[in-house]
Image (tube, rainbow, N blue to C red):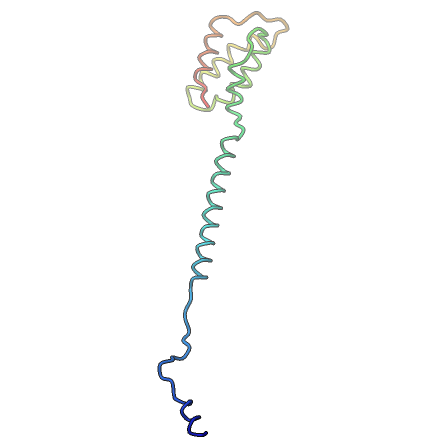
Length: 136
């Protein structure tokens, strides 16, 4: 019986020992995920800023709209409105400043009286020209 047991103890030469395998796919996956999150966050932030800028309130736009919609029937109120809304654009250039000051001098006669006449054609011409000059 001993002879038969020795036959089973044959050394095996074709089986190799366990080798450590370096697996980096988890690190690649985490890096790709983090990069994707950063990229999507950046795009979302830029989109948010673009929408916020597009919907932002602009005093210049609002005053330009109000300046063009002033009713000239109530001369006294129109003179005050032109002075107030027109001041928004007076510092745009030297030409704007000169035109605004000239318009204000023409409107002085319509502001501080109890009863005023309608605007004369020259004042209306200056006002129309100033409205054309104002841009947003």
